[in-house]
Image 1 (cartoon, helix red, strand yellow):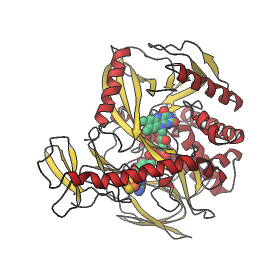
Image 2 (cartoon, rainbow, N blue to C red):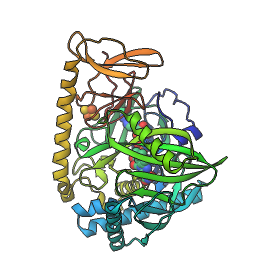
Image 3 (cartoon, rainbow, N blue to C red):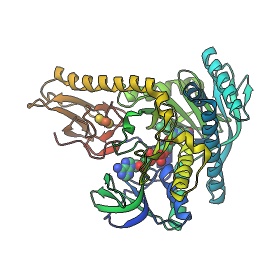
Image 4 (tube, rainbow, N blue to C red):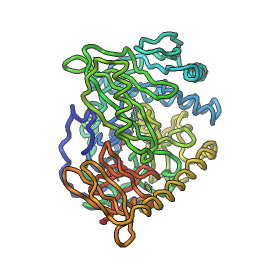
Length: 496
Ligand SMILES: Cc1cc2nc3c(=O)[nH]c(=O)nc-3n(C[C@H](O)[C@H](O)[C@H](O)COP(=O)(O)OP(=O)(O)OC[C@H]3O[C@@H](n4cnc5c(N)ncnc54)[C@H](O)[C@@H]3O)c2cc1C
Ligand code: FES
């Protein structure tokens, strides 16, 4: 069972028909989320022949499970960047996000995608949060954002004030994705769904290998959120961050803006128009993918919090999603390897991909077409600013090493496949040959697959909310039957 987001429920996409693949294009984009589709559309508008290869269907990744606030005020993101980078880089980041948001607003207005203009807020529950919000306010002002301070934001719980940025907006992300895909097709882009790219190699042309054939391209843009290619080791530069969302029916909008707390517990709030009133979206309870005992308990934590402050809200949907947080705090858009322009990557949006994904698309399409944005320097994939995350990077990769060891040791305490797990449960055990085996029971069927992640050999853990196997190393996820749900893995779990 996969939890379904409110957007997926509103815009069901039938499973993509099995495709056969062959052909050659100027540019092949891998991944049909906001980043890939925007890149494809920009390049097609400039006259390039473009194909998008998408493993499931457009919007099936993080984009279709997002909260979809489009804002240049992003919690305390600017403070995080300014701790590691000079003021000039913070300004470039802000300019990129303002430009990404403006492009998206124009696209929505030109193509009939409903968007609701709202103020964005970063608020503090307590004095620490308020201090963090005040600091963010200061840095945002220095970087050119017209923020103001609000002592009493209109929320049904006590806060210590909030920084506010007017005239931001929110969307239904799958309405947006469908419009981007339609426009891309109208400009001649070939979108092929149901095709998972397994390998990308060669230069001039680059060859993309999938289960159903191969394609070639002058340039490949890997827009799979976390790159599916290990060259460049981007998987070791980001942490996969999973978090939870709930939608509730309310008679009228329960909040007047897009809110995010600066302190713990992290809480995100927004409304969404609905046919029979309004929806309240609550998000939070995040953690590194595969490193919590019970994701279902995280959803319950959010439910209990909402019941306290919005007692009349009736739950309609619950889901989770993941994004990738770079150790040096900046997103990236550029060559996979230094000096090689034929394979480009984008990602590391730290849960702010609606502005950053569009900015990355503008930067990459500009790069391919020979133009340049001055702010794109902040998104460089290779440069001195990478080093400014090296302390965090060392710590995060030490944690990855710890999880690798722990994952392999834990099943030693559970030899033998033993009693079958209860419905909805899963466990990792050693089989009679001593191989870690992932055993789960879903929809009344017991399934056994190898517990060894097909990416780099981490041991997967059961996710009791999404009923999936999640890798605690770099965030690959697999269904109970072992099929890939999220990368960097490109192959499923092996047979038990
Ligand atoms: C809980 C949550 C809330 C968020 N809220 C916000 C918000 O309010 N505002 C905001 O700006 N951002 C938000 N974000 C972040 C934002 O949603 C993401 O950064 C953004 O959607 C990433 O888009 P993308 O196109 O880069 O990746 P994705 O949308 O993940 O698209 C990547 C695509 O690549 C495909 N793919 C993967 N591997 C392969 C392969 N091997 N072959 C072919 N295709 C492949 C996937 O199926 C997927 O469709 C949120 C994130 C989370 C987790
Ligand atoms: S995601 Fe890298 S080892 Fe599993």
